[in-house]
Length: 221
Image (cartoon, rainbow, N blue to C red; front, side):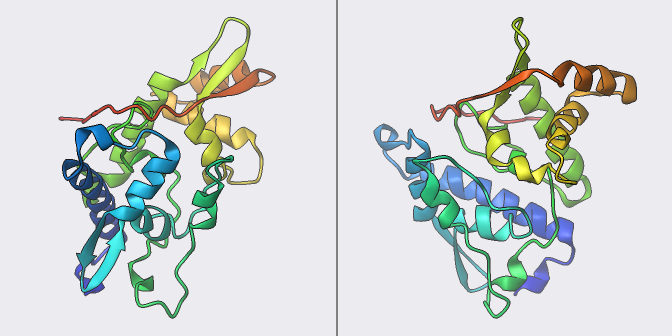
């Protein structure tokens, strides 16, 4: 039963680790020549792999969008991925699976969910006592590699920040996105944050396309 997960942290870790395991397990059963190579193919792949938990069947897609993102804003993708948004339904209160839904907002959650592609954050095994620290570490490592400030004053951000931008807009101010990035990139506090944030203001922002080419990236420590 769902009560074997006694705390929010245990539920969060269980389903993140389960999702990441299910992705790798599903890929192991595939012909290497048939690996997904586009966002739409990855979406279909996530819907095709499933596992039984406490008597219920969950697909990887369901775990990612309905369980782990139960309290998060809708995931937004441009065409031709619009069907991803439309399929991200929430559990009704009367749904037997509703108790499995993670009911807290986690701004770092998208950085914990792994895909073996170039544009994914690395794979980790998450633990209840350190899950928030681990998710932030993944976000920091990922953004350090993908955020760039070009000489022509153009700020390059990874496309996933555009998809999940509402995760970071606490007060409805889009500057919150830049503050989130600054917090992830700064190891100390306000002086570096202020410099980074001021550098971003007034800059043109472009989003670098999500790269779906296969790549396995695992944190070993």
